[in-house]
Image (cartoon, rainbow over all chains, first blue to last red; front, top):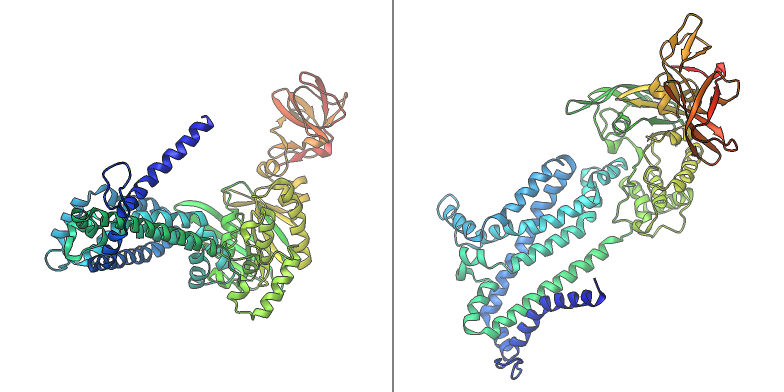
Length: 261
Length: 336
C-alpha cells in the first residue's frame, strides 16, 4: 500500500468521524444554512437552550439514569467476575454468552415484554424510572462486561490472590489491597462505556417511559421538530461530555498504575 | 529464622476423577533444598500447592516441623512462595511488593522500611524501591518476587518453576544466586521444575515424579549413576537403554556378546559419555548422524537393530556412513 493511499485512508476516516460533529456545531451557531456554508453566526440557539428549564431537567434525569446504570453494572459485575475467575473458570463462557443476549433482542421486543410483565402486581413498575434504570442497566451490561472481564483476564487474578494469601492476607485484604486496585483501570473503562451507552439511550427509553420522564435524548428528538439548531447544540454537548469523560478515565488509569505504601 | 523441616505423609489428590498425586511421602530436613522433578502433569505442582495450602489433599498429611498444617489455611502457614509468572502486584512499587507481607502482619512502618531495604540489598536491587514493577526485566521481577516471599521470614520457601519464564543466560545466573542465597539463609526449600539440569545443579536431593507417584529420591549423583527405573534413567540425563538377551555364555546386546557386572533383572543402560570409540571395541556400527555441540559432538550410531547415542570429543572427525567400533567398560553398564 503506497504512503499516499495510507494517508488518504487516515484523512477519510477522520472526516467520516469528525465531520458530523463539526457540522452539528456549525448548525448550532448558524443563523440560517441553505448554501455550502452558513450565512451568519449566532449564539442565540445556545442561549435559548441553556435558559430552558426542560433542557436542564432532562439533563439531570439522564445523569441520574447514567450514574445509576454505572453503579449497578459495577456492583453486579466486579464481585461476580471475581468469584467466577477464582473458583468457577468454566462458567466464564456461559456468562459471556448471557451478556450477549441484550444485543440479540430488538428494543421493541424488550420494551413490550417489560411493560406487559411489570404492568400488574406483584411488581407494578411499568412507566417508572426504576424500571427504566433496570432495563438500561441490562442493555448496557455487555459493554461494561467486556472491559471488566478483560481486566480480570489480563491480571491473572488467581495467581495474584494466591501470592497475597501466601503472604498472610485473608480474603478481605486480598480483595481490597490486591484485586480491586489491579482491576480498577478496567472497571473505570467499563464504567465509562456503560455511562456512554446509558447517556445516549433513546429507543428503549422512548418506548418504556417516553415524555413521562423525559431524558436528554428524548428531549433532543422532541426539540428537533421545532428547533433543529438547539437539537444540534445538544448533540455537540453530548459528544463533549462523552469525550471529557473518556479522557478523565484515561488519566485515572495512568494514576492508578503506581502507588507506594 | 527458625529452621523447620517438611514432612509429607501419603498425600493423595484427585481432580474430577483424574489422579494427580497418589501416595506421596517425603521428608525434607531443615535447611535442605529438595527439587520435585518430572514431566508436566506428573503431580509435582499439585504436591507443592498442597504444601502451600492452595489445594486440600483428599488423603494424607502435611507437617512443618512437628506441626500438622494440613487443615491450616494458606494465609496462616507462613510459607514464602515464588511463582513462574512472578505474580507481582501491578498496583504496587517494588518496595510496596516486598513490604506487602509485613504490612499484612502489621509491622510498624519504620521496621517495614528497614526490612525492605535489607531485602533489596539481599537480591541486589538497592535503589529500585520506587520503581513500578512493570518497568523491570524478567530477572529483576523474579528477584523482587523472591525478596517479597522472604521478607516476612517464612518457615519454608516454595519455588514453582521460578526460572522457567526467563532467558537461558539469566536463568543460569539466577540459578546460582538462588542456591547461594538459600544456603546463606539456611531456609528449607522445595523447588518444582521440569528441567533436570536445574534440579541437578541446585538441589541437595532430587525427587523424581511420574504419573502422580515418586519414582526415586536421591542426591543428583545417585540419580545419575544409580537410576532405579528406566523412567529415571532416561529423564535424568540421557541413556542408551537395551533389553539384553540371555545366551549360554552370558548376555547379548545389539547383537553382540557382552559381559555384565551382575545379572540384569530388567533393562540395561549406558550413558552416552561412557561409550568409547575404540578400534578393538566389541560393537560395530555405522554413523548415522553427527551433531556438533562445541566442546563435544553427539553421534548417533546404528549397531545391529539399535540406535546408540555416543558423546565423542570434538577433535575426532566423523561423518555419516563411517564404520566405527564401540567399547563399553564393564563398570559403565547400569542395570535398571
